[in-house]
Length: 113
Image 1 (cartoon, rainbow, N blue to C red):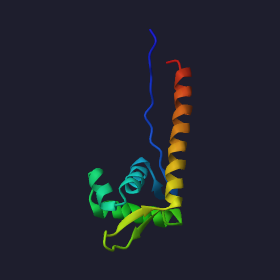
Image 2 (image 1 turned 135 degrees about the vertical axis):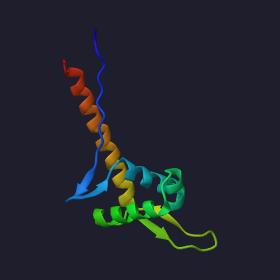
Image 3 (image 1 turned 90 degrees about the horizontal axis):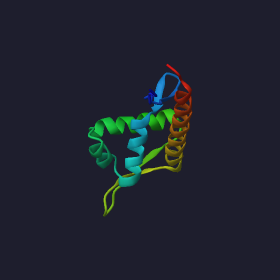
C-alpha cells in the first residue's frame, strides 16, 4: 500500500538574529500593495494597526531600505505604498518559497518509510 506523505514547512529570513520576512509579513506587504493602506491591510489580516505598523517598521529597518512608505494626505487622504524594493521582496520571497516547496516535494516522493 502506497502512502502519500507531505511535509509542512515555513520560511523565515533573518538579518542576524532579527526576523525580516516570513509568510505573514509578505502577506501584509501584498495587502498594503493591493489596498494602499496599512490599517485596511491589518484589518483584513485580523491584526491591530499597531502590530501591522510595527511589522512594517521592522521590515523597513532590517531590510536596509524602505519597503513601505507612508503618503501624506490631501483631499483624498493619506495612505501607504509598497516601494519597488518591497515589490521585489514579495517576488523573491514567493519564488524562494515555491522553489523550496518543489525541492521538498521531490525529496519526499523518494522517501521510503
